[in-house]
Image (cartoon, rainbow, N blue to C red; front, side):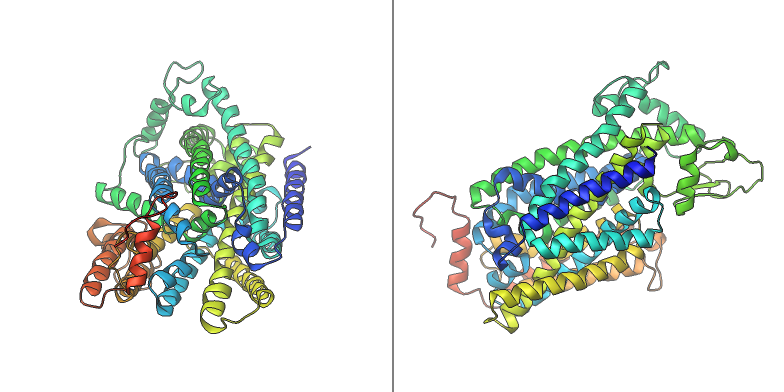
Length: 563
């Protein structure tokens, strides 16, 4: 079978599994819709958390960015991995013990204020819609190339599928669907990596292969790639070009942004108790590490293969994968000197080839001439990664509207059935908006998602951390901090990412910090504003301070002096 037939077969098979699971585990109550009834086993929740966490940005975008930026791309590895550890150890057990469904719910109750809850809802929506834009773009990329439909059509197909199992199953359906999606995506990520590692270095372990000698050449793979990059005028692959301050701030923004992501935090409410929350966090970290330690190897394999395949080669002799990716508009060749050869160089005036970094993982098996079923498997894995995270984000959006706005503020006496209906209607609206952003994304997948982390860092992280560890933090301080943090981050994004204000562009960055890293600055200002405002305003009520003390008491301790 050809690639398209294999892809169609695997997509139909995997989507049938996802939809079947959604029907089997459909939610019948708001608790099942929001937190899967709170009865998910730790292992299953660990798998689901890993799938929720490893979005299209991890599966498609991260290896692509590392492939094209080399050492500089390590900020994504460090930030996202370190951020999950921070979340699992510092926040998740305490949030689970507090016992609220959502991050806005925690903030609303901890800061005894519906204004705080509303600000948190707005922040959650901004974070989630920015994040989901990257997922829908990933879906469009896969469908565009492997089913040979326009990217916009691919996004619409993805919208319909994710809407079906997210709306029908809620968190219960999403959780068990994500277990299946993790199995699909990790198998799809590892199989071609193992094939190419054996092909290039003789090692079946990609992490070892990346640092091994190339078969028959007697040179280490990374040294070879450095040499190829230098010949074309690119920066050395193993040397960085980003300023140290920007690397630090991007890494920090990704870390603390992770700890404020509402769709990941809510996963720790789906298990029966705090002990299982900790266990599922450990399982998830193990499952995440499999992909994250392999991504740099895939990036190196892909970059080396691409340069050797296209550089100074006759355009008319390019293999079929080249023309098929050209048809999507994600590979563009412009023969500037009319010699028929592809000039792939660092000099923008002389360069004739433009390759979208997001296609790196998808195109890599084709460039390496792997079997058609492996190429199709990667497509199915990319869809699994994008759809699993998109579903989790859509649930956060619908829950924020139905639970945190409608039930908690406007209609506290609403019936369980009516609340469930509003949640499902909210998901329908949300997926339509997400589809628009998928068709009109602000940037590459990983870069778009990085902006969502910056928004989460600027808004949620200080409010959550101080809500757990600083009992004197009051509603005035938390609200002021969140508003200042999110507005500052939004301004910086709009000015320097979207050029909506004068003085945009890289030359105008404050202190040399990119929009992806500015979330750290906004977070620090959030902390400062929150603490200063809380110092000059009344302390929280005694009962709130007691709750803060109580959630920090280790599980199993029956009595403690909380005063």
